[in-house]
Image (cartoon, rainbow, N blue to C red; front, side, top):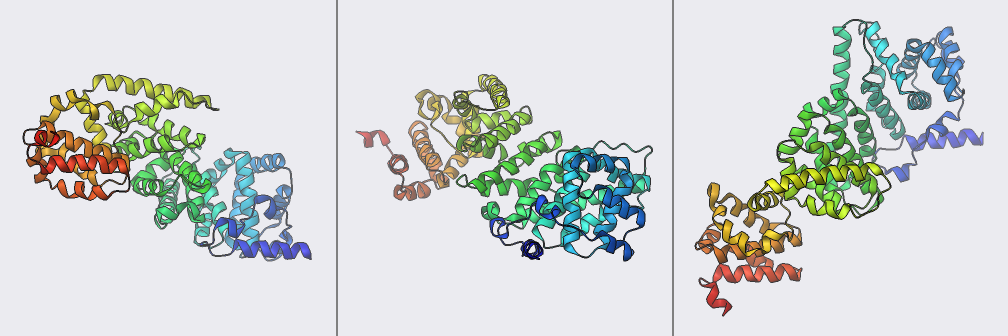
Length: 474
């Protein structure tokens, strides 16, 4: 009786609103759910299960995992139909939880079991749809149930090794419909969360877990791309801080999805050429996050993007060469990181040698993050390149002035220094800067809390306000 009360309490917890945090909810484990005993004969008596199906469920229930896998494999479609019948016909949530937990254990032990779900669909020419009952579970409120349904659907839809005996248009249509609907549902969950609160949201946890599985195969990557999922992922990534374990884990999951997406040439092109600023954000992650698994997957993603559009130049502009030099002196537990770092470094060094100092500078400016790279302090750079700021209607100068409103203190300090240097060497520098209203943001930075920003802002303002800056220096 005490055991039943405990089970009832856990099931009640599992049915709490999804807004409650995971720690407060105390999500159930598979072992907890599977420790209970289901009254299977009652479902035969109610006409939900046939005698043969009852024998099938007893043949795997409470059995060692290797026995469960072996028996499921021996009668795959029968078991798929059995589990679909239970999920679609039994209203008791504890029974649904039990079946999902059992299926999750079996699929984890033998991913090939997903083959039988595809076989049931294709061999019936789309008439028997074992995925539909699982899709209906996505409207439920139980956190555990949603987690398990999401993972199971993702495992089934991402299984890419089933080859039908003959093409079957109806089954293909059903499968494609489920893939689209499931992808859109996952992204809807992610978009419904404020990015700054993502690490604390149990919704994001299971949605990202589903996406990680889904994009492990090409159809899933394409579905996410078609559903315009990249902006939502990048927003979630940008909203994460690096302070807590939960936020670092969130960052890892998001970048893992992006890394998987980068294996699609079409997705990689969008990741680099869109206005998402993804390359710069990935470089920032490598710069500031210490957790090895996060660095590993970010480096792997950047490596996959090499050779795609302007990716290499964007990495150089974001300061990745310096970052890689630092990473090469760090000890890593995973040898793959060392290999990826070396591949990236060799590729970027080669690109760097072929780029002029102006190209490197303009790439850095376009990244939105400035560092004290050699160009900023080189008199020769400014003397050789000050006219380049006028090209394309002063496009680069406009970028520089825009960075006077950046949030990063170092970027602000470097931008102020660059503006001062530009006004110093360009005969019309003061007039051009004034035409872009550079004085206003520069003067605002005189009150910035960072003394380094104040110092360079003061120099910039002085040169903007004094016609003959050389007279000022005397």
